[in-house]
Image: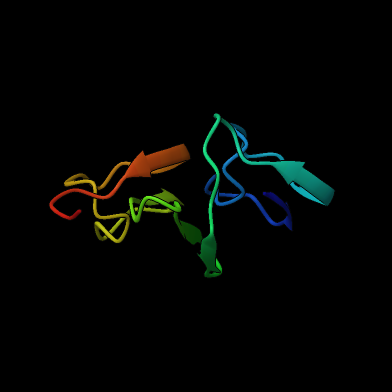
Length: 80
């Protein structure tokens, strides 16, 4: 999956906080069948129904049990 735009919190998932004017691939070897992007974080669902999120996590919105911003996809905790 390729995405572009603001990347202040790592919401593009490419492992950086660099703003991108052209699409870049999300880091890692994950394939997403569904993606939902907000202004500061992004989440995706794999074909195996595993959810991952990345970007701003100040209120725990990435669902990984932390409030740490993530520059790369992390698995959402507690669900299959």
